[in-house]
Amino acid sequence: MAAQTSETPHPDASIILINGRIATQDGRRSFATAVAIKDGRFLTVGSDQEILAYRGATTQVIDLGGRTVIPGLNDSHLHIIRGGLNYNLELRWDGVPSLADALRMLREQARRTPPPQWVRVVGGWTEFQFAERRMPTLEEINPSRPTRRSSSCTCTTGPS
Image (spheres, rainbow, N blue to C red):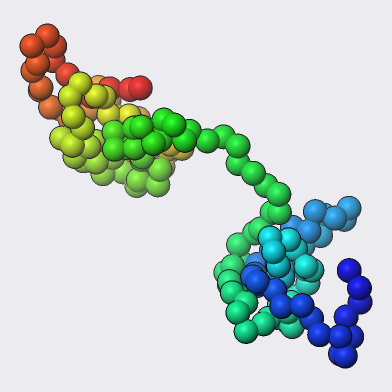
């Protein structure tokens, strides 16, 4: 990139990210606080003040609030098909503070889930997030299931 002078106008960035930690991915593994982006490519990285010089009339400025940006990071572990087909059947307990809350959510989801489907508790939850610091017991889970009778079976909730 050519050096910019006071007589050389900065190109207008389409997006500027400020107030963050931008992983530059250079050999020193350094960080900057801001980045200017145009046409989906980084123009330059630097301090908030340096990068705001790239602001144009239509530039979108996003305050990252101290969050980290890692260019090129792609989360390739996706469950697009399962998520699309089963979104309404799934329950997430990530960040739920207690088993009482989790079991209440399970009861509500079981009422909404059509037979013969199972409720799937998915995501990154752990027993250590709960105030009780343990997994739910079968005795706690079983009352969550509605009794649904069809011509051939009783449908219940359970793991996927």
